[in-house]
Image (cartoon, rainbow over all chains, first blue to last red; front, top):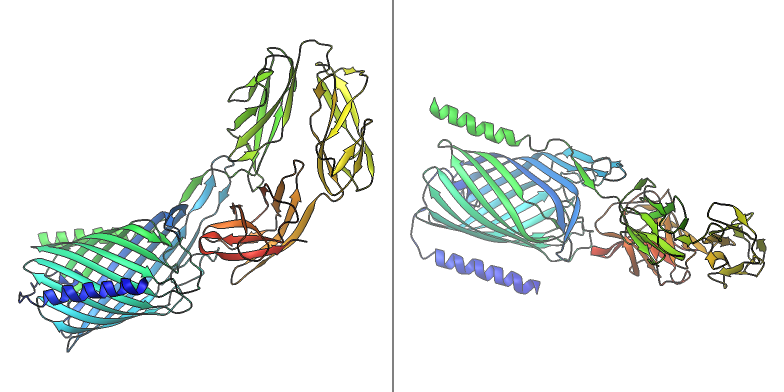
Length: 294
Length: 305
């Protein structure tokens, strides 16, 4: 079943890519283009640096069967520095560095007895991701690229007084991906598939995303769908009361707005809604960022 | 200048999001209920008299508090009970009151309604001990009283055991222990039953174990599986019980270290707690498990001996 699913996604990606190659529209140049799913390859010595903040505030999680369970409120906050740099020859490198990650679990006060169980927190760096991307086709109106992302387990897997809070999953993973982007006038369509090979007994994953965007003057509006589908082939235990569980499946829909403050500086904000899940928090993901292009 | 102000505004908006983490907050939850004990201001009433029944609830941390419960009453022709626990006597006879909340049932309280001041209104059972070794005997004593608490002389008492396979009681109130366990003894005279008198026979009917963690999980502490007076089973986690936290943790009874009979969600990961089990024999299962149900992972197991 999982193989069929993978084939379906690959077929979808190739079909969209083939259609996109038939157009000769030029990619519009605007100051918010780096937000477009990071699909287009940056020119040599060009790219962007972004400082972003992500917050999740969860009171429910999806169980393994997909049903929703209440939980003590968990918070996850990350301040991340990320960037991309074009090296020329259709090659680009990237870095995602969560420099400050804070995981919290609320205290619990029982209404009748007034007993209070203490909360917990941990503040560390998170798991880093470094990547390289190569543009197989890198036209202005269409791009097809392959990428390799390496997830380095620099976060904490047993944090706080309870030793139960996490800012990372503790495994070194490798994601190979194929991304496409298609631009026509001020509209953009993006998509991608990937395979995440995870270590330390974590299950491998298939990932996919698709998005549409519209640029108007200094604004860009975008909606992106993301899917992570675990193959459930790893024996590591699942911890769905945070975002670093094993055997995770979810689909999110994320509207995003960006505003070009200047030619090089962009502010963006998004709210991601999870529409289905397995072993994952059921909560919106809030994100803001300031992006500097160079 | 305008552009600079706009830039500052956007940067200010972003910087303000950095304060989102804030402090660790506080959730408010309802207490889990481990046990309920009910008492009455009076257990013997004349018609139209009232008595206040109070339910004291206990959570798994052994905190005691009052709270709303649902009342059950076996004979509303004898007395009624309203939502606040006020019992109103109606007609001669006896009725049994219990309180229920979240699936936990309290002890049973017998309310007696009489028509005269001289009638037997209360039968009290006393004993020099509340346990008997297997094969040994214990003399119980019954005393009848009127509604004012004055002792009455009655011809005889009828004694009964709710489980003669554990202990028998003869016509003179002598209890003989048969096997390990717990029983309820009652004395009856003039149609009036005493409150249940609980006796433990031998060491009681129980098995004990010590938890050990499995895999990378830490579970420790003592657990006791014992038969209660009403022949149900209780799993009692001792105060030294502790378990790694995890999703969907449950208490299971099993004959291996995985799967088995689901008893209840694990209400807390440390300290004492009691779980009721019905329809299970004491020696039916060999292990008590702390089991992560969603992922079929056993956090810890205690072999019962």
